[in-house]
Image (cartoon, rainbow, N blue to C red):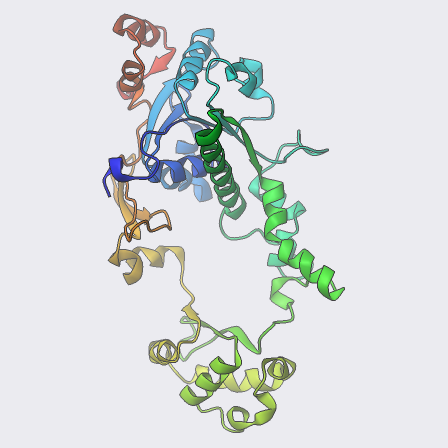
Length: 400
């Protein structure tokens, strides 16, 4: 899909963010065609240099963006940032509460100079007693009940990905798109905020609703009372090849029994209905586990697929590089990392008119677009070079 064909082509976004939540909102907009200008400090965003579990943050959430390095500690840098914002449709920021306001870059600053601006803030908390607290994905997973639900009793466990950062950014994008639609009608922009804590609360809302409906608190997922008799991870003949299988309807139970010989359990009318099977999990599951333990995963998958049952091999993230489905139709996009290595990372999980968005711009090097962006907004060359000489802005060459 060409850039000009993407739905957000012509929308200019200025992004002041780092880590995951703000950049995830930016990359979604960028993949959908918006021009996203990432403002980085001189030397580049520190996220570029994270190690361990943070090493993948920058390449995953910053493709398709343009990089402009500015010293926001200098008055000239702040003045330049104002100029960029006044030429933008959307601003993204995930600074500490009040940080941009202290620089003179708060939403109020642009009410008159850019009344159509959508000012999006990615925060830890929305309005309320906690709003000035510092938050992280893990903090809100813990205080929002998600870690309690993920780990076994007494051992709260963070989810295995930055799910709150990413979904918080997704909610931000929903708000931004809603504000853009409103701007079509009214001509004016507005402020949008999304947050980590409230995002966590939304995700565990189903468990709150369970309490409201049943009067009993939801149990952590490892010890929950399943809604289905078969909804589990099973060992196969090869202990390293586990398989999740779910049988979530009476029709699926009939198909399952036809595909696999469960003996008397499969033919027993007492197990024809789901709730009766749930009550008999302790009887049914040992038979299914024993059956699967004799078969290879390779032999089980075709049978499960043929019967239309929900199933999944248990894989690791690195296995997805070779996933045939992701590789078949643009599910992974080619990217070149800062060290020159070539890789493939997940595309935006959206099809539009049967097509997926790619990575037209790739991952920007720090300051790669500084000069071009300033020229495009009409800044005289003499002013650009003066800012560069004073280290207010920087390019890739300056960093080298």
